[in-house]
Length: 474
Image (cartoon, rainbow, N blue to C red; front, side, top):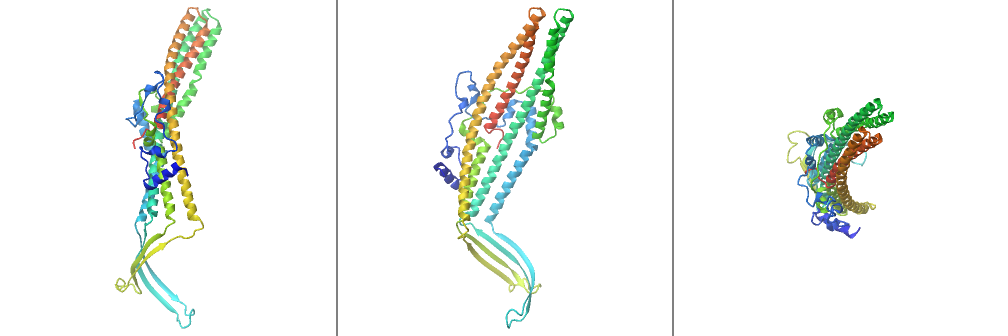
């Protein structure tokens, strides 16, 4: 194992914690000081969107100001089956801790019985056949004295596993809030795309009526009417596909909420605009991930559990000391003399057991525990590397989608101008109808692109908050 790995082993064997201040000492690669995607560039690169402070509001979805989204997330938190499974895993781990702690205390059994036996008179010469009958009742105790820390390391391992299960629960909550928010934004995005299509259909229908009137008046050829119909019906044909997508997103949200689609369809089918949100975002610094991301904290706990497991395997090299005892009453007859000082029996038996040879089982168990600890350390470092990558990717993507939205807004404005001008010129007979056709198709494309860019911007913002580990108060 490498030097940095042994340093982390030593740390966990004696403290089992990593503070935010000294965590970089035990990383294979030191964390960067800033986010690459948020470094200062030109004045229009979106850098002003990011601040090196942690978000003051951990329930980030409330910043969207959408009460419907707030309600959906609250319902998902209460009913989602992934959350319920995570809670079950956490409870199982909690009881494992309690089971391990019970080894600190003696085990006491109560026993009572009646025995009747007969011995053979033909086993030894001169020994007659005999019969015995007696009653007994008493307490038996066994208590392991944890001199060498076997029980202590077992409890420590189970406790770290339990803490890891709590972090897993928080990770599920962070993921769930992000999934619900993303599905909700996607639903609103498709609903807006449908609105764009319907508005364009209405405009194109008006243009079609104009071309038919001009054709009936003998002012234009039938080609203009055919082109107008082609554009109109092409746009109209996309409506069923969008309605299918809307239904699919509602179904996806229903699953996340632990509900059937008909329970939420009526409410979610009513179109609403996507949330508008473009304010400075607290992303902190890379080291803050250690404090916020549940998966990183879970990986830390797994290292602690494996370190305790290594200590547990080493304790198998040492003796185990037990204090055993028994006390009770035994008598031939079950009467008032049964509970009598002459019937009282007891036994005290301190015991030491020490495994001298087990065919290599103990030494290989220790070697295996070392490998498992090394694996946990590597997974911990890999988790941090992935987390940094996810945040940087989300920062860059969010920043660039905002640039795209700003540009597409201007494109849509110019597309509307182009369509209005081309229609007016066509009415006056100063421009061919092909210009109108091109303007109609372009405007529909631009408006759809703008809606999709807005949806992608919000989706990347959600991804950013998820990557930062926000989303649930712990």
